[in-house]
Image: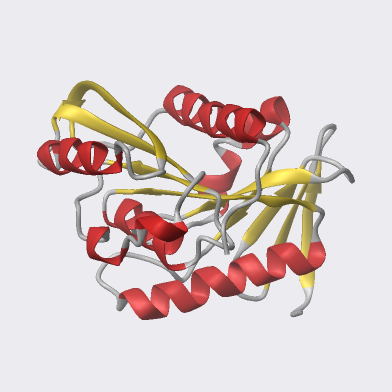
Length: 213
């Protein structure tokens, strides 16, 4: 693995950067679930820093993928996301079968795509204001016991796509929910992300199963 740079040690955790401009927040030395963070312009330290309190509160590892972004080939995004995951699994104590991924808008679509393409790696996804573009890649026979948390807005131009995806997930083996709040197409608040991650962890706790191969 490329060299790591220790950015800061906090009371509850440590933030680390590597040569790919990916960031990792490690609450402590114990095994934890992990969340991969995507951003439309490439995830940065600020994307991780803004929700470190969630990691401390819920006991999760955070990791950002800097190279994945909108207006870029989805296969290149996929390659770089999976490289971030590989570094995460090789270097930190991740609870087996408990890797999740989050994205907004175009990166929400990419987050769903990663879940559909790599169900053996990802247990669930948070997709905020995403459209249905990833749905042709969903093989429901491989997604039993996986979870999807959809967030949309009453004036989100992708609201109808979220309702469609929610309806398709019903009875498919995927555990899902759709949260629709007031407003337009917009990034989730920290409280919304806290609720989403907490929901995913609760579903894992209930199921007690390992993701399908």
